Picture 1 (spheres, rainbow, N blue to C red):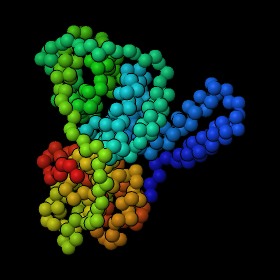
Picture 2 (picture 1 turned 180 degrees about the horizontal axis):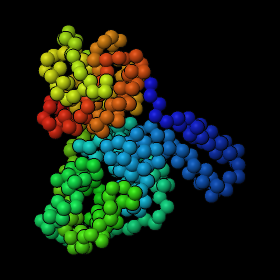
Picture 3 (picture 1 turned 120 degrees about the horizontal axis):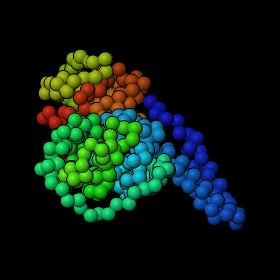
Picture 4 (picture 1 turned 90 degrees about the vertical axis):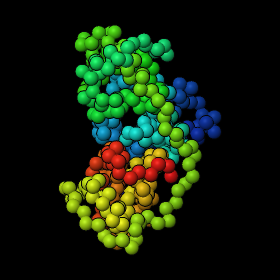
Length: 362
């Protein structure tokens, strides 16, 4: 079983810190209010570190440096932190960014986190900030999206994609992002960039009017977010093997690990015996998944290992990163003794974009 980080010391801090405070309170102990507040803050941050280590560090880096997987945002970047509210952080964690590798993590959508877990994550991320926040209004910025398109094609398309879908940078057209970000927040990001990341500051390269035009173009991409099932029912998988009586597929793996979408699709069409595991948080499985795939989040490999047959059935894992979660799950499977394992090389987002079979909803 793969161990991402050893957070046992933080777990112990949470347990003993809480017990210590409770014991003193019962005894009428005289903890000064300020000291009591600081102690609670330390326990709260310790919880945030434990949650972050399990669910966030894989993509965002151990200390929020970003770009550990799928060009995930640098959460510890000061230019980012000064420009986002706690509500922006909270809703981003809870709702995710549908259509990207950032799944909804709120339990009410099928994710792993309680509201208190998200609170602790926001507290942790905010603790990384050491520059003063910028206050924005909700006033719209008036620009010309047609003129903005010209500037976008010149300065932005290479990283953010021709329709803002994201290539090596965030998806500017994502409905959850546009629902949370104000025009002034987007404008500041263009002006100042993100120090230490590929996002440069454009205040010396582009006029303020042109930046307003860019904001207007990005805002024109706003649309409704896909419908999510709230409080989804637990899905049981009585049979995890597809085509139990089918032939064993013959895969040619890249680097002894990665199987192409073409090969997996052919095996499925041929009625081959195999198991397909969706390594993303289940909230993404509920939105869309490869037909027959079993929800098997990489952060909880034991929940699926107990369901797997101990034979030579091929097990293919996939995620949207396109490899991080599925690599982690495959490592856990191989450590548990499952030898015929592979990762979908291109990831499920590419699979879906190229028109391979997808099932929407549970």
